[in-house]
Length: 155
Image (cartoon, rainbow, N blue to C red):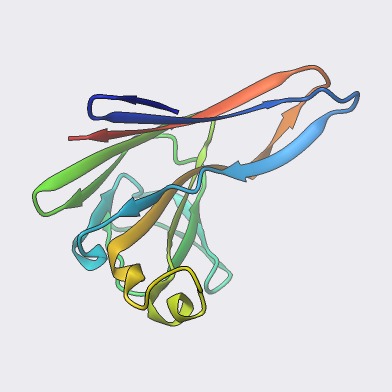
């Protein structure tokens, strides 16, 4: 992890010290503090295919911005362009390297009640925007190394 000024870089690295190819998926579980999640807007996902895991259905994103108004658990595939997360009076640029997918998650009220480490209204003040490798698992040959990075920049 590297923090510099208004930028935070989080890296995840893997070295395959085994003798066989290693195949894995991963996600950097980035919980972002929101003033009020319903006022937040996430841009940069338009046109991407996603899996809505709350319903088990795939869709193409047609909106120019994602607004969280209910339980959300989506995997956006091949989301390689930068994203912009905006709230009134502040914005965050989000980009990644080596991690082609993005998970957007908010448990909303009902699921939050089942989470022992989250206060009852905790869902109102958080949003996960996770750099991930899910759709196409990473394949790492014996002796090889790999790394992925998510960068967050306060704008």
